[in-house]
Length: 136
Image (cartoon, rainbow, N blue to C red):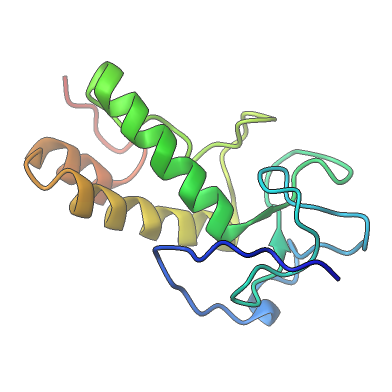
């Protein structure tokens, strides 16, 4: 079995038992970002908790966090905000749900606090969560 070799910046220990509704159930499933099959280098399984069907929605948590950080930096340079990659599936456009949403929200707050410590309004929005308040 091929192992994913990327080391995530944000290390989270999440036993796969906490992900029963989103773990990959088929050996043909692969991460839509790195195309790796099975667990990542930290042992985390492929996960999915959006509206994607078949094998198209599976991703490693470390890959989706890295993707969301890259997208967030680009979006911030273009618009002054970090975009929706931490909250919404790029493929089906549905908000992530359940355990995946929880871990991506934690990663989003950590990312904003680490990367944009000078932007106090962005930090406030990250800590308040999606759609709770709009600041213009």
